[in-house]
Image 1 (cartoon, rainbow, N blue to C red):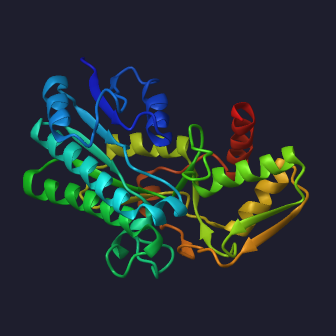
Image 2: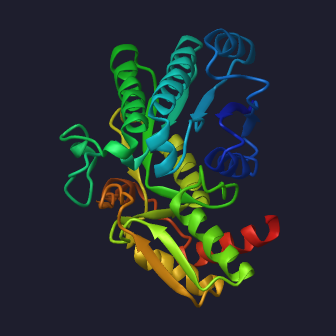
Length: 307
């Protein structure tokens, strides 16, 4: 039996690299990767030529322009344009070149700002988006809808996964681009190293977020790639959340920070709560395994080795 050729778009990123690590342990898959210099996914001609030449069986679309709240606020046009361009090029060429399965990765920020909790898949497009990441969210909504309509019109087997906040190996610790968990690991670890007795964090700390280790997401992705075929998107997460204040205190304790944590309420909190309903995923037989406590320990150890 010949191997299935799997193109992992965005293989250098946190999600893509986790998927590559997992797929490389399965002998039935032949993994195809390209870095940005080898294949610019913003270039429609280059993407067309790549698919025509490679004869890909499965596409995992983990490539995206991503960042935290600050990056989303300062570069909304870039987040909107680049993500739309990447999605349009990859999804359309995958369809044209007879790819057997495409997995599109979205984000929980697609849900309305005032979304009922926990957020069910049916709640998408029922209200206004959170303004701080609207550009990124609109692009991701367009991507999942593209998958839906390509399945409806062309029978293209494409599925859309909406992960919660992710963290893990290969996450960015650059404060201009990092997500909240990795940013807090850096802030508190550096504070201990530099002997600081106070740290000021953005917002009030009351906002709640759901966190999933990227290795658990990779397992969920491969599970759904092999077992899920519905056009309707599916939430991927833990189904439990924690306030940013509680998260900061937990990371501070694990990093050994004994000082004061202050909050700058003039800075935005973002969406106050976005915990996903994962009953659909659980009903299919998948549940994550890595606890938040263990994941934070790992992230602190990773940061210590690279700083």
